[in-house]
Length: 218
Image (cartoon, rainbow, N blue to C red; front, side, top):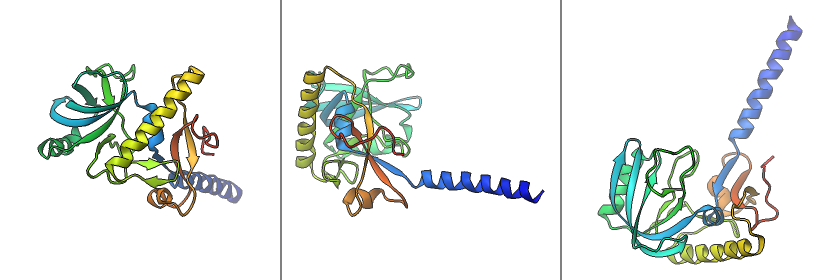
Protein backbone atom coordinates (compact mmCIF):
# COMPACT_ATOMS: atom_id res chain seq x y z
CA UNK A 1 0.00 0.00 0.00
CA UNK A 2 2.84 2.38 0.93
CA UNK A 3 4.54 1.57 -2.36
CA UNK A 4 1.34 2.38 -4.30
CA UNK A 5 0.93 5.68 -2.48
CA UNK A 6 4.56 6.58 -3.08
CA UNK A 7 4.24 5.65 -6.76
CA UNK A 8 1.09 7.76 -7.10
CA UNK A 9 2.71 10.70 -5.35
CA UNK A 10 5.68 10.58 -7.74
CA UNK A 11 3.39 10.57 -10.78
CA UNK A 12 1.40 13.57 -9.49
CA UNK A 13 4.63 15.41 -8.67
CA UNK A 14 6.01 14.74 -12.15
CA UNK A 15 2.84 15.99 -13.85
CA UNK A 16 2.76 19.10 -11.64
CA UNK A 17 6.41 19.90 -12.37
CA UNK A 18 5.87 19.41 -16.11
CA UNK A 19 2.90 21.80 -16.09
CA UNK A 20 4.77 24.43 -14.10
CA UNK A 21 7.78 24.15 -16.38
CA UNK A 22 5.61 24.60 -19.46
CA UNK A 23 3.72 27.53 -17.91
CA UNK A 24 6.97 29.40 -17.28
CA UNK A 25 7.92 29.43 -20.98
CA UNK A 26 6.81 32.62 -22.72
CA UNK A 27 6.68 33.19 -26.47
CA UNK A 28 6.35 36.61 -28.09
CA UNK A 29 5.63 37.68 -31.64
CA UNK A 30 8.53 39.23 -33.52
CA UNK A 31 7.90 41.95 -36.10
CA UNK A 32 9.76 39.67 -38.52
CA UNK A 33 7.09 36.99 -38.11
CA UNK A 34 4.24 39.47 -38.45
CA UNK A 35 5.67 40.89 -41.67
CA UNK A 36 6.31 37.46 -43.17
CA UNK A 37 2.95 35.97 -42.21
CA UNK A 38 0.65 38.92 -42.98
CA UNK A 39 -1.01 38.97 -46.39
CA UNK A 40 -1.59 42.72 -46.14
CA UNK A 41 0.15 45.44 -44.13
CA UNK A 42 -1.27 48.96 -44.44
CA UNK A 43 -1.26 52.25 -42.58
CA UNK A 44 -4.29 54.47 -42.05
CA UNK A 45 -7.30 55.20 -39.86
CA UNK A 46 -10.32 53.25 -38.69
CA UNK A 47 -13.39 55.25 -39.72
CA UNK A 48 -16.19 53.08 -38.32
CA UNK A 49 -16.89 49.77 -36.58
CA UNK A 50 -19.85 47.45 -36.96
CA UNK A 51 -20.68 44.63 -34.55
CA UNK A 52 -21.46 41.30 -36.23
CA UNK A 53 -22.35 38.93 -33.37
CA UNK A 54 -19.00 38.30 -31.62
CA UNK A 55 -17.02 39.80 -34.50
CA UNK A 56 -16.23 43.44 -35.25
CA UNK A 57 -15.97 44.74 -38.82
CA UNK A 58 -13.69 47.76 -39.21
CA UNK A 59 -13.83 50.24 -42.08
CA UNK A 60 -10.32 51.52 -42.76
CA UNK A 61 -9.01 54.45 -44.83
CA UNK A 62 -5.57 53.61 -46.25
CA UNK A 63 -2.80 56.22 -46.29
CA UNK A 64 0.11 53.90 -47.19
CA UNK A 65 0.68 50.29 -48.28
CA UNK A 66 3.62 48.04 -47.44
CA UNK A 67 2.50 44.53 -48.37
CA UNK A 68 -0.35 42.95 -50.30
CA UNK A 69 -2.32 43.76 -53.43
CA UNK A 70 -4.77 46.36 -52.15
CA UNK A 71 -5.02 49.27 -54.59
CA UNK A 72 -8.16 50.99 -53.29
CA UNK A 73 -8.06 53.85 -50.79
CA UNK A 74 -10.17 52.02 -48.20
CA UNK A 75 -10.93 48.49 -47.08
CA UNK A 76 -12.73 46.47 -44.43
CA UNK A 77 -11.37 43.81 -42.11
CA UNK A 78 -12.77 41.71 -39.27
CA UNK A 79 -11.67 41.24 -35.68
CA UNK A 80 -12.75 37.66 -35.04
CA UNK A 81 -14.33 37.36 -31.58
CA UNK A 82 -13.29 40.97 -31.05
CA UNK A 83 -16.39 42.33 -29.32
CA UNK A 84 -14.39 43.15 -26.17
CA UNK A 85 -12.03 45.27 -28.30
CA UNK A 86 -14.83 47.63 -29.29
CA UNK A 87 -13.86 50.28 -26.72
CA UNK A 88 -10.29 50.48 -28.01
CA UNK A 89 -11.48 50.88 -31.59
CA UNK A 90 -13.85 53.73 -30.74
CA UNK A 91 -10.98 55.55 -29.01
CA UNK A 92 -8.89 55.18 -32.17
CA UNK A 93 -11.73 56.69 -34.22
CA UNK A 94 -12.44 59.52 -31.78
CA UNK A 95 -8.77 60.50 -31.52
CA UNK A 96 -8.04 60.05 -35.25
CA UNK A 97 -5.20 57.67 -34.48
CA UNK A 98 -2.97 56.58 -37.36
CA UNK A 99 -2.52 52.82 -37.21
CA UNK A 100 -0.55 50.07 -38.87
CA UNK A 101 -2.54 46.85 -39.25
CA UNK A 102 -1.37 43.30 -40.02
CA UNK A 103 -4.03 41.35 -41.91
CA UNK A 104 -4.44 37.76 -43.13
CA UNK A 105 -7.10 35.92 -45.08
CA UNK A 106 -9.72 34.11 -42.97
CA UNK A 107 -9.25 30.40 -42.31
CA UNK A 108 -11.52 27.81 -43.90
CA UNK A 109 -13.24 27.32 -40.54
CA UNK A 110 -14.13 31.04 -40.30
CA UNK A 111 -17.10 30.90 -42.64
CA UNK A 112 -18.99 33.57 -40.71
CA UNK A 113 -16.41 36.18 -41.74
CA UNK A 114 -17.66 38.27 -44.67
CA UNK A 115 -14.59 40.46 -45.24
CA UNK A 116 -11.61 39.49 -47.38
CA UNK A 117 -9.18 39.94 -44.49
CA UNK A 118 -9.06 39.57 -40.71
CA UNK A 119 -6.66 41.11 -38.20
CA UNK A 120 -3.79 38.98 -36.96
CA UNK A 121 -4.18 38.26 -33.26
CA UNK A 122 -1.82 37.31 -30.45
CA UNK A 123 -2.65 33.88 -29.07
CA UNK A 124 -3.41 33.82 -25.35
CA UNK A 125 -4.16 37.47 -24.53
CA UNK A 126 -6.21 37.86 -27.73
CA UNK A 127 -4.69 41.23 -28.61
CA UNK A 128 -5.08 42.22 -32.25
CA UNK A 129 -2.14 43.52 -34.23
CA UNK A 130 -3.65 46.96 -34.75
CA UNK A 131 -0.80 49.21 -33.65
CA UNK A 132 -1.18 52.86 -32.70
CA UNK A 133 1.86 54.42 -34.38
CA UNK A 134 1.93 57.36 -31.96
CA UNK A 135 2.06 55.00 -28.97
CA UNK A 136 2.98 51.43 -30.00
CA UNK A 137 3.82 50.27 -26.48
CA UNK A 138 5.65 46.95 -26.24
CA UNK A 139 3.81 45.12 -29.02
CA UNK A 140 6.55 45.06 -31.67
CA UNK A 141 9.79 43.22 -30.85
CA UNK A 142 12.66 42.82 -33.30
CA UNK A 143 14.34 39.40 -33.44
CA UNK A 144 17.45 40.94 -34.97
CA UNK A 145 18.49 42.75 -31.78
CA UNK A 146 15.78 41.66 -29.27
CA UNK A 147 14.66 45.25 -28.74
CA UNK A 148 11.17 46.74 -28.61
CA UNK A 149 10.49 49.10 -31.53
CA UNK A 150 8.86 52.21 -30.10
CA UNK A 151 8.54 54.85 -32.82
CA UNK A 152 6.74 55.11 -36.16
CA UNK A 153 9.83 55.75 -38.29
CA UNK A 154 11.60 52.65 -36.98
CA UNK A 155 8.46 50.49 -37.32
CA UNK A 156 7.91 51.46 -40.96
CA UNK A 157 11.60 51.12 -41.82
CA UNK A 158 11.77 47.68 -40.20
CA UNK A 159 8.62 46.48 -41.97
CA UNK A 160 9.94 47.57 -45.37
CA UNK A 161 13.28 45.86 -44.73
CA UNK A 162 11.69 42.55 -43.70
CA UNK A 163 9.16 42.57 -46.54
CA UNK A 164 12.03 43.15 -49.00
CA UNK A 165 13.87 40.10 -47.64
CA UNK A 166 10.66 38.06 -47.76
CA UNK A 167 10.05 39.00 -51.40
CA UNK A 168 13.65 38.09 -52.30
CA UNK A 169 13.23 34.72 -50.62
CA UNK A 170 9.99 34.01 -52.46
CA UNK A 171 11.57 34.96 -55.80
CA UNK A 172 14.46 32.56 -55.25
CA UNK A 173 12.64 29.65 -53.61
CA UNK A 174 9.11 29.78 -55.01
CA UNK A 175 7.70 29.03 -51.57
CA UNK A 176 4.85 31.18 -50.41
CA UNK A 177 4.15 30.00 -46.86
CA UNK A 178 6.72 30.90 -44.19
CA UNK A 179 7.06 28.44 -41.32
CA UNK A 180 6.73 29.71 -37.75
CA UNK A 181 9.80 28.78 -35.72
CA UNK A 182 11.00 29.50 -32.18
CA UNK A 183 14.07 31.66 -31.57
CA UNK A 184 15.56 31.62 -28.06
CA UNK A 185 15.87 35.09 -26.53
CA UNK A 186 19.25 35.78 -24.88
CA UNK A 187 19.48 36.89 -21.25
CA UNK A 188 20.01 40.57 -20.49
CA UNK A 189 18.04 41.76 -23.52
CA UNK A 190 15.02 44.05 -23.59
CA UNK A 191 12.85 41.28 -25.04
CA UNK A 192 13.87 38.82 -22.31
CA UNK A 193 13.08 41.30 -19.54
CA UNK A 194 9.69 41.97 -21.11
CA UNK A 195 8.67 38.31 -21.53
CA UNK A 196 10.47 36.60 -18.64
CA UNK A 197 8.24 34.82 -16.12
CA UNK A 198 10.59 32.31 -14.51
CA UNK A 199 12.03 30.24 -17.35
CA UNK A 200 13.03 30.42 -21.02
CA UNK A 201 11.65 32.98 -23.49
CA UNK A 202 11.27 32.68 -27.24
CA UNK A 203 10.13 34.71 -30.21
CA UNK A 204 8.07 33.45 -33.11
CA UNK A 205 10.16 34.05 -36.23
CA UNK A 206 10.02 33.03 -39.91
CA UNK A 207 12.29 30.05 -40.51
CA UNK A 208 13.96 31.48 -43.63
CA UNK A 209 15.33 34.50 -41.76
CA UNK A 210 16.75 32.72 -38.72
CA UNK A 211 18.49 29.45 -39.47
CA UNK A 212 19.31 28.95 -35.78
CA UNK A 213 15.59 28.91 -34.92
CA UNK A 214 13.80 25.61 -34.21
CA UNK A 215 10.35 24.30 -35.08
CA UNK A 216 9.95 23.28 -31.40
CA UNK A 217 11.18 24.92 -28.22
CA UNK A 218 12.12 21.62 -26.55
